[in-house]
Image 1 (cartoon, rainbow, N blue to C red):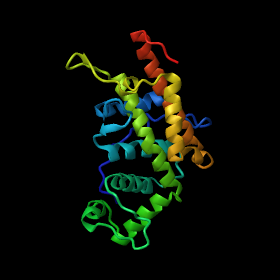
Image 2: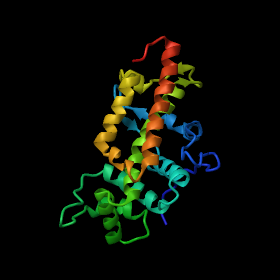
Image 3: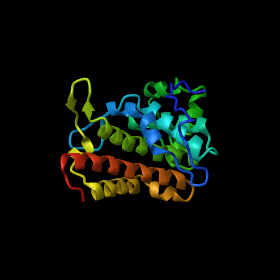
Image 4: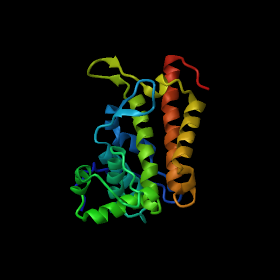
Length: 230
């Protein structure tokens, strides 16, 4: 059992259309409104401060999988989320034959699992090789949480408490409609997400719909500000 304190997504709100296998993005955006507190680097689409990152990735991954891919192992997905977050914070070559890992750093990950060191190291290797469909799913969903954070940054760009506008990173970066679409297509190609179309077509489509949602909310802001989109 994982010790991770995952945010709960209300599954009754994650409505799907059974035949189309699509999630109601408006409801997803509503459920993840707290992503408005993500801080992006100036002039960049990359988050600088992402509070509760693994918990939020796990929540999104679990909610979407429950609706679109109930055949996937949810516990394994949550474990891979923890592993992927752990690997982000260290510089380890877990593919090396000697399997050397800094024990002090690794303790933080081990504490969140009930298994032994050997079992966890094996899972780390499994995640990195991307052989398991759940591993590929997590890699795809990690990118989706960032796209969703951009959507929230646009929708919540006005600080009601301070009565002032906040930064909108996607607009600051200078990307217009076609540029946004192309940018995230390039990211998908870099991450290899396009290769998942055979075994994870629903997730590839979910990502495409999320990018379209981002473009639509940005277009609304541009219309208000009188900025043309290309």
